[in-house]
Length: 365
Ligand code: PEP
Ligand code: MG
Image (cartoon, rainbow, N blue to C red; front, side):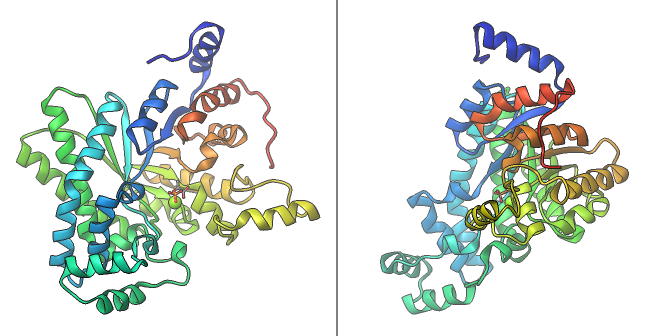
């Protein structure tokens, strides 16, 4: 707990007194969550769940799930993943006791879970009781030319709702245990890559139904929220409709930048270097919010969301959440909090204070 001592501790204390923006962290491991808390994070704004499945023991079952031929077989694989997820969420919620924890349901580029090594293909085939050729054929059927713009995020859950059902069950089984042992916890469930209200309507209904069933089974009362990421231009434009279902928004400015510019977040560095040399564009929009484009969409999304649902809680959890100029922009736009990598939390606290004091941070506006 309060981490900094001496003059720096005093300075951070002053920063916290004047800032209006909340500062949370992006964290998905117990270590990151502890570091974040030590640096003064006021909760987790984004716990990504994709990487939780890369452990060798777990990825086997994830592959079984993705390559299963029917819902029954998918559920068998998901049941094996449930205890792992329960433990993941229990750890994050207890480390962040008393503070909100936003758990983002699965958002993988699907290809990351497909087996390509012969031994892995054999293992999945054996687990599913099919031939290696079947697995190779099913993997080919799932191939996408552009996975980052493909079958990921909520789209995956519209196709296979049982994935989010398992994750929701894990969150609320973990939560129920913690409540029973006297912990105060604030889980928030976040749906990624929503473009249309109907996606959120369906998936929120699934989350609420599952969460309420678990809480009833466990005889526990707990309030929780279900919200969405706004990370596609269409979601920002449709924010009024989406806010009818969303209890909070979190801007995913990594994907929002990628889709606003039509520029791959994984390849952008190369182009931006050439652009810088040629003097076409001097800043990196994946680091600092581009106020003329992405920032405009953040403003539109916030305004339209709050027009529909006054007081809607709005945050940002892309990499920009740890960038001082972007934090200044988030303050000016009236966001409630920024969420950034654990080691940037102190910088974010200072930048939020500087913004509140009206300090001038150079931006690309
Ligand atoms: C984002 O897109 O900004 C985001 C936070 O999600 P991810 O980086 O996991 O796609
Ligand atoms: Mg994203």
